[in-house]
Length: 267
Length: 284
Image (cartoon, rainbow over all chains, first blue to last red; front, side, top):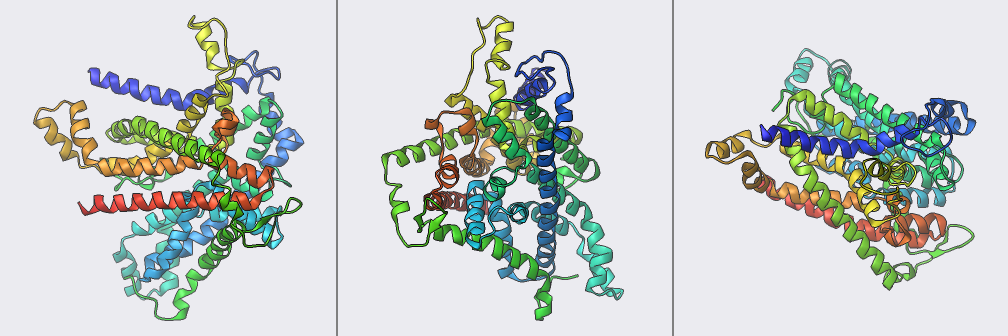
């Protein structure tokens, strides 16, 4: 009995630690006046409206969403053929590209960011919006690469072989057997890259930070000039988007498997 | 379909686009950065091509040594705190029913994906005088009046542990979820209490996993670039903050690049070590 209570207490502490700053931010985001007060004084959802009505915040939102939608798509476009090739062919030297795909994510982000800064400055394209899209696509290619590799590994090869025996060529097998099987992994890879790109600061800042504001850049800039409640409402908005996307992945896919649990049927 | 070696050039076509993108936009930028670290600073632009070791020579200063030492110390502290909290937690989590695990994983991923800007802002609010946690302490009579808890070292450490904790749990999760349950059952049958079984059987069995996780979290913490800036004083700035500062605000890209190359070398050495540790575990 005491063990159960101890466990609950421990889980509660961790949950409190993880939730506390978010609760305070959610609290200050509904202040009626432009004060940093907790518990909130009055109640107003006006600061959530600000994200969409204030021209500066709306522009930042549009930049962020455009960036995330496009870069996640390119990341998947890079990861899909690569993961397929590595699954389909025996070519040990091609693993070097897998390492290259994983590297930007393992190294401290400042390094990748500075690499992009020096690259785009050298080729003379520094500050163009599309440079951030490409940079994010490379920076987050790891995520669809990992989910897709898991997806391919889960395919029963005899299924594919059966299709081939029945006379399907490579292209038909890919279209009718392989793609439908890995679709959930493709979607989750895209979703992971999308959410992380939406939240990413340093790479976006070092590529387009001087010309364009994404939401995280806008929050940081606003933070340096004092406090506006819109920062709090945007933060809550971001948490909600992330929880929604990951919740959907958990609902329609197997998030435990994606995160490394061997099989889907429990312990 | 069996895996086959590519027979013709046409078989390589799927590799073409990914290889091109990764080489042009990762290998080339990375090499550019290494090249820039040998260039000369140009205050009016980015840099002037050259081949000098000045940027590296600047490392050999007391100031730089201090920053490096502080960064490493902070990252070690974050890694130890995170693993100490996360290891028992993740272990208990993997023993819970599936839907409980799923719920936690969704929450952990949501926190993990949060922008460092938002984490910094959230903790600076929680530690502030007007909206902070000390107001709560005043309300329950623990303190006389609310105080600001930042900028302090404790604030930096708390923020960074918050940022790295979900990462730590998710790194530990696969190893713990695959842990052979019979191991624990045996210990229990022989009369060990659950707590004792955890410390005497589970923890030693996963010794290498713990070491590898410590290193992974250490590298992750080294990458924190905003929290020391938002929650701490300038003396709490780490190598990552300094790189950003040099490259952007001091417009000294070559020196920033040199520091980045140095950080890469440290990180690579450590990641290499985790791979070695991991291999040993698999061999057992």
